[in-house]
Length: 236
Image 1 (cartoon, rainbow, N blue to C red):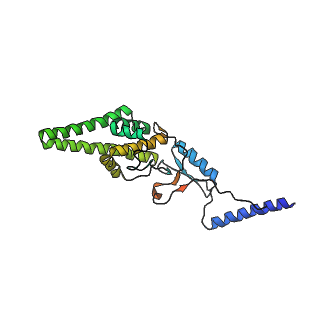
Image 2: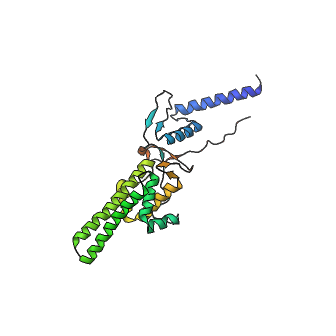
């Protein structure tokens, strides 16, 4: 046995001892390539499998609610002009922008969703105009009810979008409030997220950026970023 073989055997033994030490301290060692492959395959299937680190042959399947945690593209109010094309569409023709978002997210036809939004908005505006002209409070109540309906309708679909694509965000009530207070900024944020991540017909193709591993029960914790292991120099 030459010196090279002795050195190689010593290095393997050192790696095994290091692994045993980490396991004894409660640290789980996961192969990086295996982790990346598992994330990629389960993202295509729409289900997530909890990695069986004890090798007991009992993997557990989870719904799409766990696995990859994503973020909205940009801040809601500060980055609304990040894409001026989307911002102009959201201000000048919000029903068209809403319909396009719903079609990309897989929540129905662009024409149908945009028409529903347009009808609700027109009824609310006409009711407010009728109140200004006639001073009858019944029109004020009708207009207020339809304005709230618009916020609830759009907030409901924003919540569906968050749940479908595992986007970290606030509660359903906050989604409705965002669409009531600043619908243009909210539409712009949703459109940026869908377009920049190449979402087509409800399928998130992504753009190869950082993903986070975890579940909704771990939202309070700092997500982990997938990165290759550091290069370690071997002893000669």
